[in-house]
Each structure stands twice: as C-alpha cells, then as structure tokens.
Image (cartoon, rainbow, N blue to C red; front, side, top):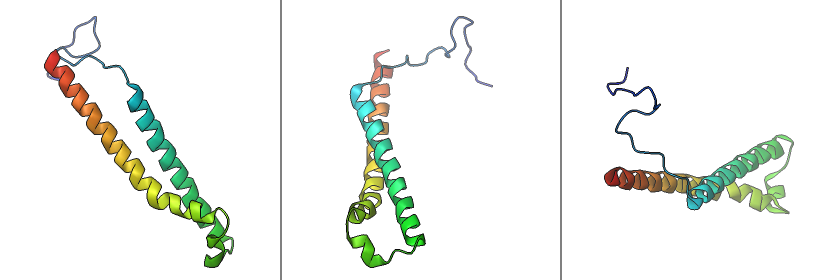
Length: 101
C-alpha cells in the first residue's frame, strides 16, 4: 500500500510530477531503436535458417548476405545506445519538470 494519500478526483498521488508531452526526438529515438533491434533479430534468424538449410560459409559472402550478417553486429549495440540516450533524456526532462513545480 502506498504511503501517499490519493484524492478521490485524481488518480495520481499528490505531489507527483505532471505528465510531460512526448517530444518528436523521443519518438524518433524510440522508433529507430525498435526498428534497428527488430531488423537485427530478423537478420539473426535469417542467418540461423540459412545455416540450417545447408548454406556454406562461402555463400554468406555474396549478394545481400554481408549486410544481413553485419546488421546484428552493429544494429543491436546502436539500438542499445539509443535506448540509453532516450532514458537519460527522459530522466533529465522529468528532473527539470520536478524542480519547476
């Protein structure tokens, strides 16, 4: 049970920071991170399926396979950094809003 009292007309605890609007940069970071992570996972599964279907390592050097193999290598760390940046920006913004109110 929360130690804060709730008012009947408000679902938030008293003294809570008001909801902040979502900025465009936050949406761009979130969707970019989600897209990179999703594409990286799909490429990872494509490599697993290609290997399971009998492709040799030399076959992964031709066509679109170098891109498919490289995306998980770079995409997942970049998506992680984008999520961390989004969290830091959100915490800083909420901290500034709490100081103002």
